[in-house]
Amino acid sequence: MKKILYLMHLPWGWIKQRPHFIAEGLTDHYPVDAVYRFYRVPFEGKLVKNVSLPGLSLTPLVILPFNRLAPVAAINAWILRLYLKGKIGGYDVVWISHPEMYEAVAQIIPAGAQVVYDCMDNHPAFDLARRNPSWSRRMLAAEGKLLERSDTIFASSESLKKTLMERYGLNKEINVVNNGIHLEDEGAGQVLPPAVDAALASPHMKLVYIGTVASWLDVELLVKTVERHREVVILLIGPCEISLPAMSASSTWDQ
Image 1 (cartoon, one colour):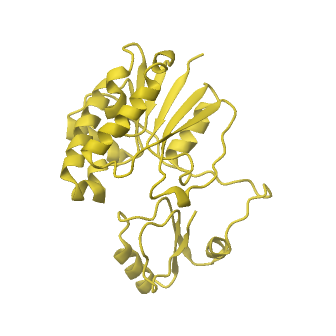
Image 2 (cartoon, helix red, strand yellow; image 1 turned 180 degrees about the vertical axis):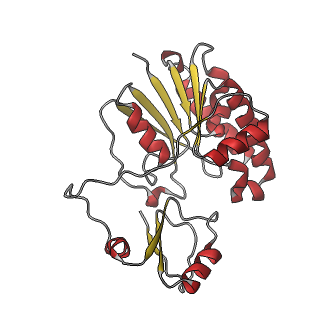
């Protein structure tokens, strides 16, 4: 049976999203060792208690803050390589969720191992990339090499697939697996926060966003939407890294 090394750039305790669901789903068929970065600063207080399933081994690696700075990133990459160097040869598949993780381990991945890249974001579009051109250049270079090395590539949307193919002149198949959400069965003991429960029960048209509430959201557009269309309720669910205007009709659930 194949054994998978699953490299996550998000802490296992971050809001449960694509990398978490895929890691859990893979355990239906293979044993999975998930190695992820554990942020003590500044995110520790926002972490939740995502559970681990049978067949899924979780290993947190504490990293230094300010990873966007090249010298710090180099130290954090060294920590990851040091941990994996004697172990990575035992894996048949290395599954990577971010080009920065590949940048750290590229030199120690065995030639015979299959590499899977799950591209969930257009990294140069993030505010961090615009504010830090050197980081953006590093990620573009790392992603290009990762795509070249990958045996299987996933993208979270058709638009992202097209972006990757045009940006890198890629002549490989990219499989589109859209993001999703798992809703617990009724009566499973899951209780929603009152604000979320009330918003979902509203007869109004509901627009729901699940993920980190951060700078990539066009808050001004959201405010204009609820001001102009009173029949709309916008629900933002996830850790909140930005300040939302008091006038906004949005509700947030800070995990």
